Image (tube, rainbow, N blue to C red; front, top):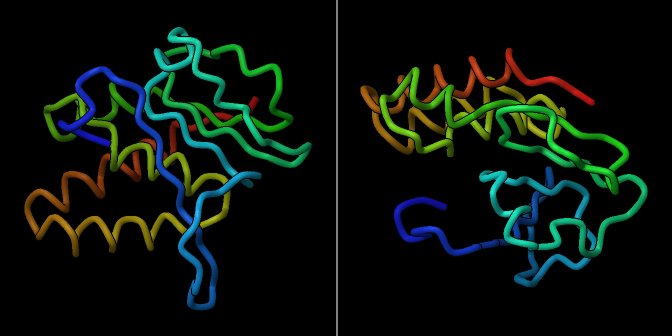
Length: 140
């Protein structure tokens, strides 16, 4: 997600495990759905496709968006957190902070990965955005 999106709906699948992942496939029944841009819902994209009763929604939203089909919803205005910390409305790092709030990954691991990926200067800003987002994430 980033500059290649340019307003079009984009999705990706990520398979995570404590052990090495030996498959390369689509995810048809996700445990977690992450929506990095709440306008995707207004574009009539069904983000609930394939969910189960246990699927969690992590939502970058400026308010409590309607998420009727999900039992558990975590939300934060990750775009505003990104603007406050990195000076750009690119919510990638801050959305990872919201994802960490679900417990699937620790916030410390997210911070470390962002610093390793972006380098010390940009990484520190993104890591702070992730931490701030983590602290601001609320559960519906």
